[in-house]
Amino acid sequence: MRAPTWLCARLCVLSTIAAAIGCHGAPPHRPGEEYLSKLRFDGNHAISDDDLKLGLALERTEKRGGAPDPYSIQLDTERVRGHYARRGYLDVDVRSSVERAGLAETVVFKIEEGVRAKTKVDIQGLDKNKDLEKKVRDALPLHDGDPFDYDKYDLAKPALLDSIEDAGYAHVKLDAEIIADRPNHRAVIQLVYDTGPICRFGEVQVEGVNGQLAKAVDEREDFVPGDRYSTAAILTTQRALYGMNRFSTVRITPDKSGGDIIPVTITVATAAAHQTTLGGGFGLDPLTYEVRLRAGYTVTGWPGPLWASGVDLRPAYALSRTDSAYEPRIRALATMQRTDFVNPFVIAQVEAGYNYLVVEGYTTYGPLARLGLTTPLITQKLKLRVGWRMQYDAFRNVSPLLDAALQHAVGLDSKQLIGAYEQTVSFDLRDNPLETTHGAYLEARFTEGTKAAGGALDFLEAVPEIRLYYNLRGTVLAARTRVGVISGHVPVSERYYAGGASSQRGFGERQLAPTVSGIVNGNLIAIPFGGSAMIDSSIEARRLLGHIKSIGVGGVVFLDAGDVTQTIAELDPFHLHYAAGLGLRLLTIVGAVRFDLGYRLNRTTAEDPEPTGRYAFHLSLGEAF
Image (cartoon, rainbow, N blue to C red; front, side, top):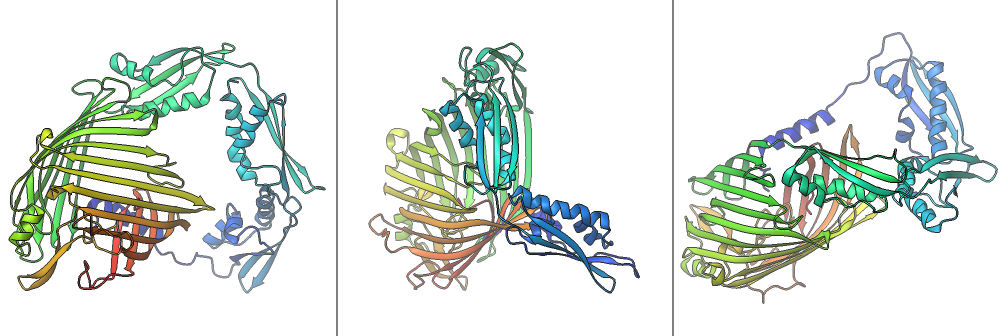
């Protein structure tokens, strides 16, 4: 188990959880006066009690310990009837009564639901244009014969207009209404359109910036004068401008007052140029206690309008749990990033830094530098990143468990100069990278260490990965498989480790790897030293279970599989480490707080990593993948 990295984030999470689940006593009421003790619903099958209570005045009366009055009962009876009408139960009958037991009163709603109406969609005004009708029907999540649901229709109303406007009809008007056909148990959605003329984009004017930034705005416009008018093109342009991370506000205003030619004004406001971040925390791993700090500073617009520069400093102080020795840890990184380098959407990156890090069996330190270019290929969803990296690693405080032969095999017996070329191709089809409900993500990363890149080691690395997501009636099924192989002279910094909150959850952080065990200062410890081949795979089902006040609570069931071996030949996809488990998610304002408990299903012999540990508990922020 590893503690969260930043204490400030943990305190924020804990205070949010405490506010959400704090205890409350029974509502007060005056002695000698009647009070509402309960709301009861009889005969409801299609809608739950909790859903029916939403918006009822009597629910608030119950919470404050007041007495129900006839007017509130009458209004809430109509509200319950309205709940059913919105679901298509046009003939629902709702009757209310009051039951008394001493001073306690119970309001009872007796419900006869009746037959749920079917949907009928009637589209007029499109002159039987099948393409336009298809756009409308695709935008409406209700089709002929579906059970009627007013909320689905209501949420889709803006899209019903946008679908025609996006086809070039900038002046389209829509008259929409629901007609109750009770004899036939139908709810008719009648959509009457007045499309107006087909329109085209006119002159485009940019306000708020000039020079290189104005040029960058022009290059991200998804339309030019003369193109058919399209709301999708406007939204694509707005997303591209926000994606530059340079603007706090982007407004794209079409002028529809001039007939069928639509001039457009793009107004942007630049974001704050300077940003400072500070943080701190306390961490635990199998061998150390650690106090951490973090400081960052970013300036946009320097040394040029399309540049962003920053520094990130992460000092820490660690106390060894085995020999009580103190170790400082430092990770410092300076970055510069240039947007629209040579061509639009191409990002150039320069990084330089220094590492002084303590891991399980040794301390590594040295400088590093990296150059990179990121560019889309055909579409923004498909991206290529190419780069060059130079890294110098020296080692000290090597654990006595790592004997001379093992140090030589791993590469800890001498300093390492790494020069490598890097390429990554990614294809992102997810609906939301942070809280994905459907889609896919594919990535392939390749690294070639070679003397031609300035290094002293020759090696080849390939890491393909695929993630799939599917929403099955509110349950998100998610799966991931990642494979890594390195051949040649494997650098210490490139060796693979698995286990932890975002990997094989049956193991502690970095504990699924080739390991050496022994007695140090009277303590039995195990030190993972990494491998050159890896499989890391997970499948899980995620579902929102409910809410505690405004905080969503989700549950997860998962099955993880993986292995890390010293050589590629030893990696057997049919003999992996498996772990099953359960997880809890609290969807707070700082992200999803994740609690996972993994149980190892196999391979717990003395020859395997962590042979005596079948359980692993993880607390982290964000989904596993």
